[in-house]
Amino acid sequence: MPGVIVIPETFPIGEAIEELLTIIECSEQSEIENQVLHIPL
Image (cartoon, rainbow, N blue to C red):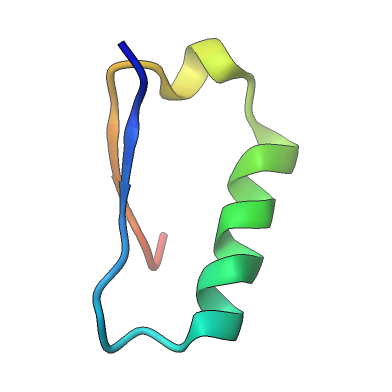
């Protein structure tokens, strides 16, 4: 099952993209599988 990343609607889009890139670059797929992550980290 894939993971879910929750981003508030009021969070600035540029910062959301940066946070997503950080998650992608610093984690393996198996580390976020079956997880619910909330941004900001």
